[in-house]
Every structure is written in C-alpha cells, then in structure tokens.
Image (cartoon, rainbow, N blue to C red):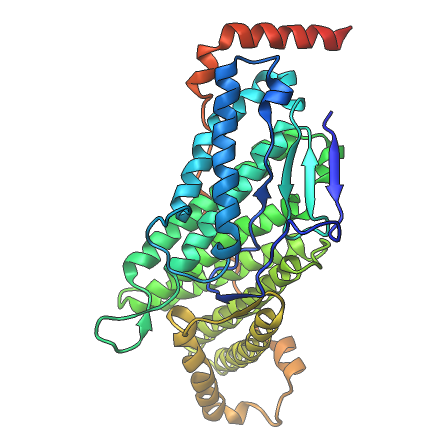
Length: 431
C-alpha cells in the first residue's frame, strides 16, 4: 500500500535553489522540505482530537521553520542566535526530534493508520520537484534524512576557518574539529538507521518510487561521506600531534580512501544529473582523489624508511602517484566548485594545507635523490600503473548507534480509542 505522486520538475516553483552556496568544507545536497498537510482531514475520524492537533502542531512548526531556513541555510553563514521569525539549525533539529516519537504512533505494530495520510516533500537531487506518498514510513525516512543533512550543515559551519585572535591566519579550532567528528558520527547514525531499519519497512515497489534523494545508494554514500570526513579531521589532528607516528597517519589516510571509494561506488550509477545531484557526485569524486593523494604520500614515506633499492624505488613511485593525484584533485575541486550551485573553497587548513606544500616538495626531492633508478622521464599513465598497492586496513570509524525513539506518551494516553479504531480498520481490511 501507499499512493505515490511525483511532480515533474517543470510544474511549479516550490523548489528554490541558490545560485551560489559560498564556502564549502562539508557538502550538503540541499534540504528536502515538507509541504503543509491537514491531519484532521485524514485522521480526524480515527484518532482523538488532542492527538491529531499535536501531530499537526509539531509538523506545522517544521514546515514553517524549514521553509524559512532552507533558502538561506545552504548559503555559507555563521548563524549563532535565533532571529525573529527564523531558527537556528539546532532549533530545527530539535523540532524534528520532537515530532518523530509522535509520528511513529502511525506505524506502530503495522497500524493501518500509516497509509491514511499523504505526505509531500520537495526534493533537491531528484528530477521530480516533489514526491507524495501515503505511507508514514516515507515521512519517517524523510525526517531522518533532513536531520542528517542539518547536522552536516552544522559540521560545515564548524569547519570554515575563522580569523584567529592574533590576526595571523584563518584556522579551525581544535574544539570545533573535535565537535565536528561527533556531529559526523551522529549524522552517519541517522543515515545508517534509515538504511537498516526504515527502508526495509517500505515495499520494493515503493522503494523503487522513492526520489533519488532517498535512494539507498545516496543514503549509504552520505553516511560514508560523513565517516570519511570524520577520518580526515582525525588525520589533521594527527598531523598536528608530535606523538602520532607515520604508521598512524598512513592508516588513517588509507581508511579515508576506502570510505570515499565506497561512497563513490554507491552513487556512481544513480541518476544524479540534476543540479545538486551532479554536484554531489563531483564532491565525492574530488574527495576520493584527494584521499588517494594523501594515502600514497604517507605510504611513500614509510616505504622510504626501507634500506633496499627496491623500497626506495617503490617510495618514489608512491610519492609520484601522490603528486599526480594531488594535481587531479585540484582539477576535480575546480569542477565541483563550477557546477551549479556555484561554490568556493575556504582558505586551506588542516590536512590539505599541510600536504599541498609537502607532497610536491618531498616528491621532487626524492625523485632527484633517486634519479639513478630511472633511465627516462615517466608519464602520468606509467606513474599510476607502477604505483605500489596501498595497504588494506579495516575501517575503524563507525556510525553512532541510533535507534528510533520510543512512542510518545500521548499515544498511551489515548490508547483505548486509538486501538479500537485500529482494530476496526484491520477488521475492515479483512472483509
């Protein structure tokens, strides 16, 4: 069960997209926005008035807040206080968290109520402007997705360099970096829950009808993106630490490659060709190539610690691969920023600020020292083909274990009437 309606992209003006989203450290593919609905029309005869009004009030709050925030949230800003008529990201996340336990009453124990309300959301990555489904699990999925996107937007704000008090150069504080890792894991937890516990509640037919924004591949890619960026922050902190060994840095870099490779594998064949979707693909490609540059660099440094001619040759090959991947990542970054909506890089900081200087310099130095190992100048293709294989490490960073919240007490308060209605609806279905 579950009626589906998708509105073509050229049918109206509900989907508002900025032309420029400013500085991007963490990519967020727009925000799906819920459209207003009247719970009393579909549930008024089946649930107590107080429960219907509570559902309506909670969802209307989200509709108003999201509608106000969405056009501006995707543009870079450092918003710290609630504005008149608006909200902070945290306020909107809290509104969604308040709504979810009440919403879950519609799907409890396979209740027929889950099919009685048509939920409509405006898409961002899909060609269809909006998607409507008469299934409350679609609403739960949409809520979890929006919660995750809001957290990624929070992480982006935390990871935009700020001018330091000494006026020296923009940087991201250690406090912000640590906080961002927690946010990445929390966002990954929402997305992991969506894939493992919510998508399976929808029939295969409904899952095929979901907008690409909510496709399993996109949800998995976003989860992996969050974990990959979390490892990137860990690596940056390791680079700043005098206690972190080369082996630790290489392991983190190699893990980062695997996260981004898996993210790319999940979305490369999806129809992400419309605005945000195309930009999403380009972001994953850029970060995957950038991660490979980082991993080959640290792998090369460790190989160079060997005492044989072979190990030095392999070290040079790894460092040359790192240099080529770094150049490719700069091209991929430019392609990402030029794709609509336009974006730009914040001032370099962290891992890539360090490596953008170290990789070319160390590669040039090692090639010069070991030039007797090579009788000819090697081209890009040969460099890539002869690069030593990266070591394979198990992925250490995992999503937070998020579980759907327990049912809101308001359902227990109204359980007698509600259960009688549910039993009646189930009996009618059997006739």
